[in-house]
Amino acid sequence: MKYIIGNWKMNMSAGEIVAFTRGVKKYKIPKNSNVQFGLAVPYVYILGMAKIQDHVWIGAQNVSEHDNGAFTGEISASMLGDVGLDFCIVGHSERRSLFNETDEQVNAKIKKLQEYDVMPLLCIGETEAQYEAGSTKEVLLSQITKAFEGIDKTKSIIVAYEPVWAIGTGKSASVETIRETVGFIRGEIRKLLGHNDTPILYGGSVNPSNSNAILRNAQVDGALIGGASLDADKFMQIASSLF
Ligand code: 13P
Image (cartoon, rainbow, N blue to C red; front, side):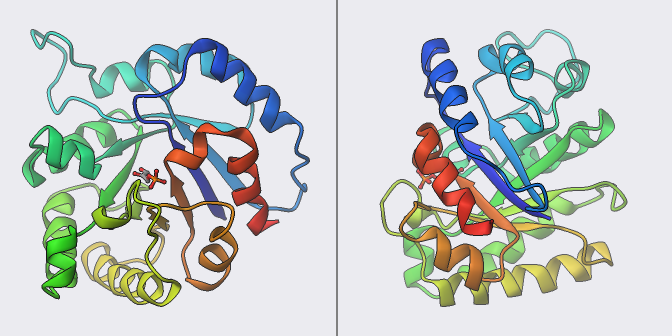
């Protein structure tokens, strides 16, 4: 199975979502394509999306690490499970850098999602300074180890390698870098979980011009797509690299 997952971040309107859905439906997806689509949408559009999208996983972009209670403005894992969400992004670098989210919070969020059977999609990645300093592997290992501390190893989780310097910059990591880094992540996750079943995606400036090379040659299980997932044509052109 391969995964094409869009992260809409804080974008889209109700009208744009209708246009996106129409746009996607123009494309024929081969029956044997074995591609699972997913969209991480802003909370307010989640229920509407569930009605218009068949066979597409609908997910959230964040979740509270707390149980229901007095946390004004927060959304709990129990609520995400209640409305039948398929997955939820955790630890996106924008949440880590703009909202000071810690590895401990990321770990608590994964555990809460597992409790309510919403699959976590964990994002990890190094900053440009860490990349330049040659500490990518050390950073990733620390993020994975802390995120996985005490989680239920029998439940599914997806991991996305998103180098921070490649997000929204138009500067994707090279196929060689992705292949090597994802290979490293795969090995470390195997050691931590004791199995090889965790899909690992790449994210960071994936677009229709580089998707073929990345999805076919970088030994990834799919892509997590930001900017290009706002446009139905670009999103489906990226996916068609896998058909
Ligand atoms: P871009 O595809 O816009 O670089 O964003 C990637 C991302 O952050 C997905 O979570």
